[in-house]
Image (cartoon, rainbow, N blue to C red):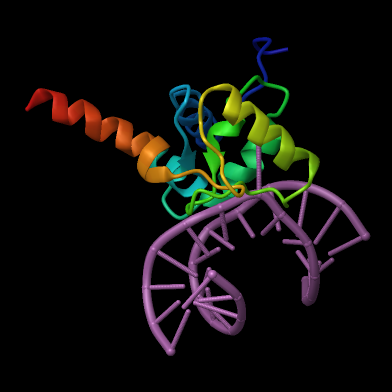
Length: 117
DNA sequence: TCCTTGACCATTA
DNA sequence: ATAATGGCCAAGG
């Protein structure tokens, strides 16, 4: 064999890197992750990656739709699990939705910038 | 090969 | 707030 590790496509690696960088207690969207990974308009790919690499311990619960709603169908196993994991790290989930103005990753960045003023 | 199905999204109406 | 449209694209029938 070549070098033990299975080769992960660069695009996949870029997306995984962004997902792993989401701070605990904050959330972001599929599209935002794609954009940060240098792959604008490829939100769908992020969803596929999350499923494909579920063996890795990723903070998948911090990934929501662009409007802050959980992507899984209400009542589904994934939906319930994600809600629990988010609440566990202090994120308020009301009606299957998170207030992005409050818990969004971007907002976290804004706070950092404000501190410099 | 074609068609459908998604852990999606921005825009337009 | 809901709905249609077009973009995106791998996987499975």
